[in-house]
Image (cartoon, rainbow, N blue to C red; front, top):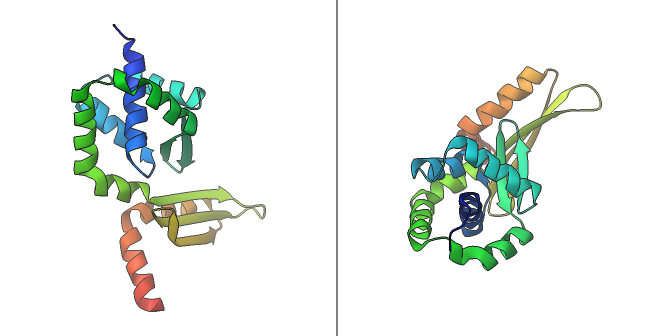
Length: 171
């Protein structure tokens, strides 16, 4: 039985999201799929959009990152069609996720977003998460959008040092 390649790519994405207990970014998903040359960038964009449109995955956008997770409907779909993913592909995915687990989880657990407040200021929200719990959740109000953006960008680079500093100073 031949299958539509787009269906296989969708199942690959669903399988990846199902195998982790945290959200994956587009760059994390694409690094696996493009590195293994399963498909190209444009097709992967279409696959992700289709999965979002059919609500098989959900998205959480913050600043310049979008994180994806599998929905219950996505899990049901995957359980029904999982046998259409070849064993070699499953082995590739499992090896990738095992090898990169800590790196992937670390990236997904750091969140930074900003928004305009009703007073006209901007608020940057900085979160470091472990499992489903927030280790730290900081909100900083600033007068300008570019300041909020800078704070969020720096959080991705310096969150460990900031968390360590807070722990040393507060305990």
